[in-house]
Structure formats: C-alpha cells, structure tokens
Amino acid sequence: MGSFATNYEEIVAVLLFVIGMSNLVFQPNLLKKIIGLDIMDAAVYLFLAAKGYIEGRTAPIVVDGILDASHYINPVPAGLVLTGIVVSVSVSALMMALTVCLYREYHTLNIDEIMMKLRKEED
Amino acid sequence: MTELRIILLVFLLVCAIAVSFSKNLLISVVIYMAFSLIMAIIWLILESPDLAITEAAVGAGVTSILFFVTLKKIRSIKTTAEEDIDE
Amino acid sequence: MSKKNPNYQNSFADKFTRWVKGDYDPIEGQMEMNAPDKEVFGDERIRYVHLHIVKSNNYSERMFEEGLAKNVRRFTGLYKIFGVIVSVFIACLLLWTVSFLPKFGDPNAPENNEVATRYIEQGLSETGAVNIVTGMILDYRAFDTFGESCVLFVASCCVLILLRVDKDEDPESRAIEDMNDRHYEPRNDTILQKVADFLVPLMIIFGIYVVLNGHISPGGGFSGGAIIGSGLILYLTAYGFEKTQRFMNEKVVKALTVGALTFYCFAKSYSFYTGANHLHSIITPGTPGNILSAGLIVYLNICVGIVVACTMYSFYTLFRKGGI
Image (cartoon, rainbow over all chains, first blue to last red; front, top):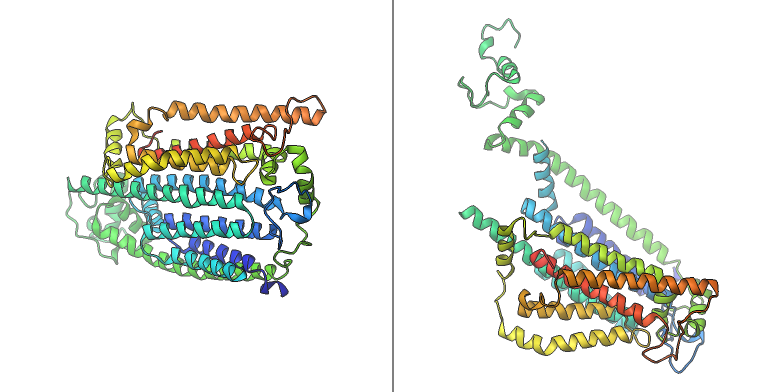
C-alpha cells in the first residue's frame, strides 16, 4: 500500500476512468455518453504518461548534445499517447455523426426513448 | 510542485463530475473544454510538451468545436421539425 | 366461449376468427363493437394482435406503454444496481492494482527499460531528430503512424457517408441545409471578421512553424495539422462557404489527403527497404538541429500535417452542411 501516498496521477486516472464509465453506463443522453468516453480516453492517457515520468529529468528533447539516458524521461509512453489523442478525436467525430443521424430519425437524444421507438417499430 | 499537481488533479476530478451533473448540454461541453485545458497543463508538468501542444489543439480546440457544431445541427433539425409540425 | 354459446355470433372468439380470415376489421368493421375492456383481452396473444391493429388508437398505445413501463422500470432498477456494483468493483480493483505499482517518478521502474534507453542514446545518431518522441513515432514506428493517418482518412470518409447531402439528387434538402446552416449565427459578423483577419494568418503560420519544427522542438504533424485546421475553421466561420470553397473544395481535400498518404507510404517503404537490406540510401540524417535534417522526418511530418488539417476541416464542414 506504499504507493498510495505518492501516485496521485494514477489514483486520479483510475477515478476518472470510473467516472467516465459511469457516465457511459448511466447517462441516457448520447452526447454525454460521448463526453464520458472522451474522459475515459483522457484517464488512460494520464495513466500512461504518469508511468513514463521520472523525477527530476527533462523532456526527451536533446539539449546541449547530452545523450545520456539518465537525463531524460521515458519517451515511449509519450509516443503512444500522441497517437492515441488524435485517434480519439476521429472516434468521437464518428460517434457525433451517428448521433446526428439518430436525432434526424427519432428527434431525441435520449437512448431510452430511441429504444422504445425502435421497439414499437419492430412490433 | 506537488501542491500544484494535487490542485490540478482535483480540478480535473471536479470537472469530470460536473460534466455528468450539469443539466445543459452546452455547459457540459464547455466544462469538457476546461477539462482538456487542465489536461494540457498536466502534460506540461509531466514533462511531455508534445502531448501538451497536441491536447491543447486537438482536445480543447477541435473536439469542442465538433461538439458545438453537433449541438447546433441538432437544434436546427429540431426547429425544422417544429416548423413542419406548425405548418 | 365454446361453440355451444348461443350468442356465438357476437362473441369475441368468433369475431377474432373472422378477423383472422380477413372478413372484417374488428374496430372499423361493419358490426358495431364497443371499446374492448381489459378483462376481455385476458389472452395475451389477442391483446397483442389488437394492439397491433390499432396502432393509432391512443387507448391501446397507452396500454402498450403501461405494459412496457412495468418491465422497463424493473429493468432500469436492476440496470442501475448492477451498474453501481460493476463501477465500484472496477474502481476497487484498479485502486488495489495501483497500490502495487512502483512509486511515481521512480527511475528504476520496470517500464524504464532498455527500449527507452536505446531510443534516447541512439535516436539522435540514427534518425537525426533532436526531439526523440518525433524520431520515435516517425522513424522507428513510422508504419504505426501511417496506419493512424489512414484511421483519420477512413474516419472522415465514414462521416462523409453518414452526413452527406447529395446535391444532384435532392436540391430541396440541400437548400434546407444551407438555410439551417446560418440559423443561429449572424451572417457576415463584423467583429468576427476583424478578429479572423488578425488571427487566421497567425494561426496558420504558427501551425506551419509547428509542423516544420516537429523534429527539433515540441510539436509535429498532429498538433500542427490541428492548429492549421482550426485556423481554416475560424476563417470559414467568419466568411462563409463561398470564400473557402475557392481553395478548399472536395477535390482539393481529396487530392491533398490521398497524395500525402501515398507519398508517406512510398517514402517510408523506400526507407525501410534500403535500411533493412543494407543498400545504399540517398536519405541521410543531416546535421541535427537544422530544419532540413533528420532525413525523411520533415517530409513525413508535412504529410501527416496535411492529412490532419484536411480531416479536421472536413469534419467541420461535413457537420455543418453535409459536404466539403
């Protein structure tokens, strides 16, 4: 249990993940569900970047020709997160387009009402 | 530095909770924008300036613009439908 | 309701049988029929059929919703309980895991292994990029970034499919979309135009700076492309589609994106082919720190920037009027 006193970033990342997930589970509004998914994305990125950070070192940009690994933080998580951020935008744009299509069809953003209307159409 | 980290992280949590409890969709989107900006500052503190600049441009900029345009589109569809009903 | 019933002609079973055979409509048929009571429709199937016929009838709709509402309420209650249980369980599990992780900022943590060390120590001499993250994502893991650019392209294609309003097939809906487009904002807003006059050139120049300096300072194709895209979006918001269509229409966006992706693919294929086979390559790392150094990274950054800028711009236009 020793890590709880120092790993604030990881704890907050876990809490943000759960908040985003409960947004996704409990919110009936589709746009809020999309925001919840974005929050979950941000939580995962925060966790990754926090694991790459090393106390007292600088960003991985070579300054003054110092090529010592003990001088820079870990560049691997930064590269992973960089690709992830841009993909998450395209994912949310795609989901927003689907939301607009659903709204055009059913005139509501509430997922429960959409399901009711769908079920009535099926009957 | 630890105090600043804690303050920013607490603000992040507050923003995330406020998104789910705000009644107005526009307000949720604006809160999400603030969330992304705080995230950009946290990337800077975590010594990842690449991530900070990308998050500020993409998360706080483009995603929020897309949310706003979606809200506007939905509202215009609503007004068109209401006009149709009135006619 | 047996056949011995003398009033069989008027009984419900007979009416139902005749309705099934298609003789008459039980509600709007020739025979008069009172609004059915709930007891009569004890049989679940009959009730279902009845509801099916008179969909427009308010009464039956209400009954349908009452029947459904009970199930929905029960389901919602269970759903909420299970949701809370699962959320709390996941939170506890993940927090329990966090307690076993190495301390924040620990240099001896297992993820700071030989991969990161090798990237830092050999990165500058092998790729020529001062910014090690850019050297990593555009040289060592370049095909990963290529796939990601393709993800952006495919996403914009999907949004195009979902939101497209066809000009030729349906001119009316096109006109409606155009009319709705400016429904909530003033046309030719002076304040917005003055601000855009000042900000758009700065934004686009800053974006180009970030793209071109991706290998010697923080930034790169993704962030620079997003900044250029935001500049274009601001210009579009201020001046409307007539002005932007002169230089950013569907053909230009398509040509830029596909051209950038093709160039990326061929350049990186050449680089991997010569690099992996120890053939002579014309690509040299150059002097670290110069703009035209780091081999292909500058050109790949420009390609990624073009793809990202076009994607962001086309997302915005597709959401606004259903066409680039």
